[in-house]
Image (cartoon, rainbow, N blue to C red):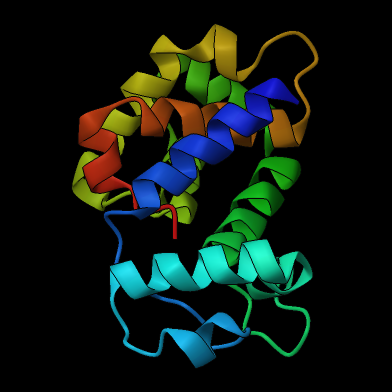
Length: 159
């Protein structure tokens, strides 16, 4: 659980540099209508403090809110890991391959940086595919690799 909190903090911290893709729902929109990163942060704080359930709805697409793009990307990437676990594990160990390249694309890594992404995952193979790692753990560990490498933070959008 502690690791998940760290990954969430890293993802949230990286999102500060992203554009405002808020869905336009929740009471925070009534208070802070301007579409900027500051107002987006204030909306999220307002919704999170006053109406925590609305914040979950904004993220996961319930409560008549649009599903946030990072959740959509995560769903696609998790599905890919689930369907291709053995092939992906083998190719991460080798540091290259079609499944590994496709996995990088589902996460949003730029094509020209996929070889770098592949090498970085290979370097962290033991952490990514630790003993009996679940599909979710593989994806979270991959996010950690991306979020702790400045080149990959710039290359892989995660959204």
